Length: 465
Image 1 (spheres, rainbow, N blue to C red):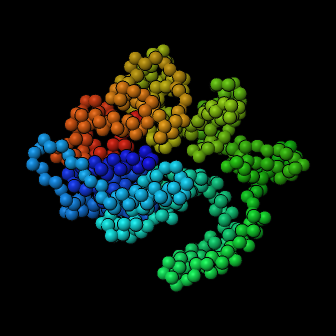
Image 2 (tube, rainbow, N blue to C red):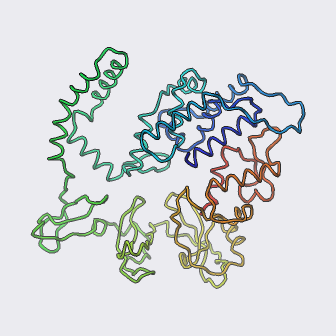
């Protein structure tokens, strides 16, 4: 199970337990799935009303699920029994993952498997909103994101340059397949096969008789198109052309192979007037001394060390207006002469940091927070970002460290310790066990207001560095 699925199953079980339900059923599972980010994205894309779905499930819990009566307030919460339907869904998800040779089971696989339980209220509430089995949709979403065909910007998928190229190549070379009419007709044929009205062997033969020649032609003729530009080659005077290679465009002379001039696309088409006028474009790598060159990533251009991959130093290039607004407050770090500036992250979120960053690592969400957290902090160079990943060992905030007493834990390990602390100190609201009431130790982590247990994971995210 992935970390996300583990947290989802734990949340579903706690939902059943907190309501003193005798059974942990599919509806508890769907309720917890509706708070998973990837499942939320899929359901939102197919037009689901998540608020209505959760409300329907809560009404179902109140009216149709057996509750164990409380005879003594000191009796601990019950341990609900897992229903056979939940076991079947998890087993189907496992079988699907094994068949596709994947390493982990995610919440999306469980959502797909859940649709096999057609007689359940969970599927009924999804069908009520016109949502059918999303197996193909989930697979497509996984493919176009894992292969960098799209990027996510504010919950919206946008095609990358690679995605546009793949789309154009498919449209140019597989016109009979990349067609809505073909897809609709294919679905009708597959339904006919399922109903025994069409012989599947005959169907496959007719399909391959048409499709195979298309593939053979594409293997010989399909290529990534080169685009002539209005830029002139500085060595021979011919036009430069955009050429795609290794997941990015570069400029090469149209006179190749007689002229082998190439250059990074960004170096000729960059509009420097859009960036911080005080930025030094011609600088050396602060770590190895080699020249820094302009490169482009999914979040725009940046300076990267020409010694890559031996040296992986990068320097972000601030856009005009995001280079920082002087707050007038001095950096509180000892030995630092910088001032605190308000900046905007690449995700559009405002934050405050020292004007000498990355030479000084002072950073926070407000001037007051920085002055409190860095009161006796010596001026320290910012550490490079960790590449441990969401499932690996994490560097924890000092607020989390105060509770865990140990750094370098995984997200799952941190979550287990948080829940153990909540249980040991009775921090669940007795009137509503789903709500966590922070004490003085949890307040710096979760805030002072009660937090729904299904939102615990997102509340903890900001404390992983």
